[in-house]
Image 1 (tube, rainbow, N blue to C red):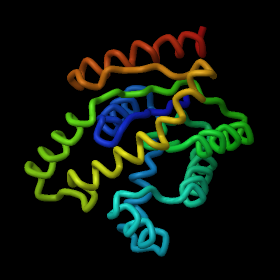
Image 2: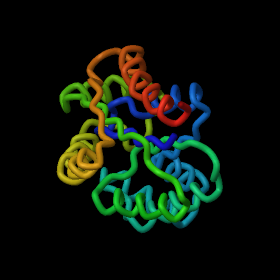
Image 3: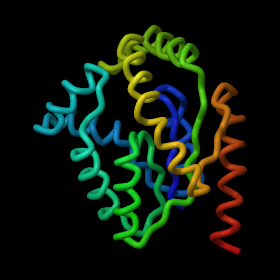
Length: 195
């Protein structure tokens, strides 16, 4: 299975991705994790990415797409979850091209829907409760990221809706309820893949 988890920053995509990785033995391709890994290594890419991320802005498509392409080739033969990618229509179309070249196909796009004010409250709680808060964990950066999300990332929805790939999940509920809802959709896909 190839899955995209889609939703605003702080909607719980990472938590749900971890559960799906474990349950379905998938590889998680999180652009945020890939970028943080580059930052921790102190690579040139990591340094460039850090200054961009600290401002709450998005890293360029060129950097993201080259990282994604490399990861897909390195882990060919596995199922994948894309977490935090694609972020705009150009990335969505480029992902389709990459998948086509590798003779792979996207199965489902899961949108986790959470209201902005709830997301801001969540990140403020995360910062209060954590001594190891990330440099991009603060309400002002989140507000900027939410604006970017609403302006560019949401433009992807009609693209996937037209392809019949998009399903919407209410992310305002508890983690278990959201997981059950997602797994209900995935079980339908698995039945099609393994009749």
